[in-house]
Structure formats: structure tokens, C-alpha cells
Image (cartoon, protein in one colour):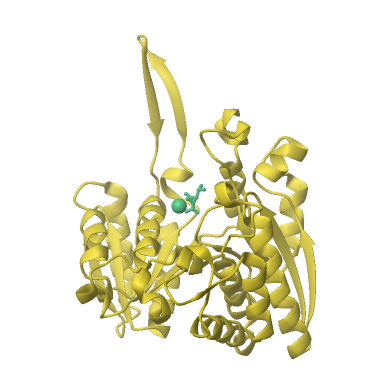
Length: 360
Ligand code: IPM
Ligand code: MG
């Protein structure tokens, strides 16, 4: 099979971790007889430095023409980086929002899994973590507050900022359908998260989710208020299977869920549209403080490459091979600094990538 993959190394640790994911993908291509064609584009600070904007139209066109996009991370230190002296629409994050919208990537899948091998890193009490958990946060990614009209004005000498939260029923329905489809392939439970006790957009969200639920009688659906959900994620994470929610709630809850696993350096994510196309990236950020020091954990990016093979190319066997190689490396006792524990062997980003590659 010929796979056209666009890579966005991005900023901070992005280039290092993408390089390791490519290493793994090259090995998969060799072993299973695929041809992978890689092309890099600039996004975020890396694009600002060259083009003055975080994402050019040319870069979007190149991404659109590919089968899938593999991304590292974007952004810098918001306190010290000159990128954050620019107006908001020229900062690194604007590039990410722009590519999501331009490619219509409305469904963001963020798994939060407690790895058996890394259970010691889980910050929860043992009686809670012992039950294990495997949560899939499904976040709506192209609507809501992050894409609504916003402005800052001055009225009678008082500064005032306005952000708007809008959802129409079609935007809600398409993500709900994706959520139920995926729940059906997992443990058949879907928790829809909203703030329906206050927000109109949440009341519509809940109504549409209930309409879609009628088509999925085999999936158990429940509704949970977002504040309660934030609490339940630390109190009893094992209760969740698929968590379906709007853009901002999903942004916040997915960070919380990934932290609860104790191993954010391990978590992948996929952003999908209604075709096979997807953008795949680790759930963690660009960690500018450790960039270029060979300290980063490339596993989340390598697992994102695995998700890419699975969701965009239907190459389940190849994706399984990557997941198994990651598991084997952990069982063999290798750890990067972020997931290090006593008695294990500490390795850098490059060596971790090579150890996984060898095990494919
Ligand atoms: C994320 C990030 C982005 C978001 C930022 C960088 C715009 O926090 O992917 O979760 O809020 O979507
Ligand atoms: Mg976020």
C-alpha cells in the first residue's frame, strides 16, 4: 500500500518525537511491504519564524492532499517566547485551530488508559486505581467557544471581552454518531457531558444526543454535568468508557483524564473528519524546557502513528505490531525520565525510539 503522510514536527520537543515515530513507521513499511511517502510542513512557531504566520495556505493545501497527518507539538513558553508578543491570530495555537477547521476535523479522540506497567505513576489512591481504566474522551473540535465570534471592546471607559458559544444540531449529531459508533466497538457505554443546568447549547446537546441514542439501543447512555464529571474522573474513573463532550469541556477534561493516568507521555490522539482522513498527535504539549536534550518521551507520538495506521489506513495488523512493541519495551524495563521508576533502565528519546523499532 502507498501511504502519503504529511508530518508537522512543530515546536519544542516536536521534531525529536516525530523523528522517532518516523523511524518506527519506516520499519513497519519495510516489514509489511508498504511504501510510505513523507512530506513535512511548518506549523506553529516554526512557521511564524519563517513565514510570519503560524500556518500558510500552501501548508494547508499540502496537508489536504495527503492521506493523513502526523503531528508532534506546537507552541512555546507563553511567558518568555516572542511568539506570544504577536496578536492572538498570529500565535502558534492559531495554526492548530486553523488546520482543524480547514480539514473539518470535528471529532477528537483522546484515549486515557492506565498502563499496567506504569500503575505506580498513577496519582490516585491504590484502591481507586486498582480497578484500572480505559477511557476514550471524544471531544468536539471545530465548534463551540473556540470558534465562536469574539471581541474585546471598550464601553464607557470599561473594557469588555465577549466570546460566543454556538452549536447547531448538525454539529452535535455528527459527533454523537461518531461517539456511539465507537462506543459500540468498545464497552458499549457512552457518557455525554454538558452543563444543561445552565447553558442552552448544552440543553440542545443533550436533546440531540438522546435522539441519536435511539439508533443505538445496545449502547448504554448517560448524561453527566461537566463539574460532576471532573470530580468523577478522580473519584471513580473505571465507570467511564466513551465520554462525549463539546470543545472546551473536552479540552479541560482530556487534560485531567490524561494526568490521572500518570503517564501523559504515553497518550495518543486522533482528530478525524467524516472520511478516512485524520490528524494524529500526542496528547501532551511541546515541553520547551526539555526540547533538544534527548529527554522527551516519543511513545505518545509513536502510538499516534499506530492510531493513524488503524483509523486512516485500516492497517490493524501493523498498528497492533507497534502497540505490542511499545508494551514489550515497557515490560523489558526501559523508561524515559517522565515515566521512570525504581529498578528500570532510563533511556533518552532516540534510544526509546530505536528500542521500539527493534521490537517491530
Ligand atoms: C489541545 C490544546 C489546544 C486546544 C490549544 C493549543 C489551542 O490545548 O489540543 O488540547 O485547546 O485545543
Ligand atoms: Mg488542551
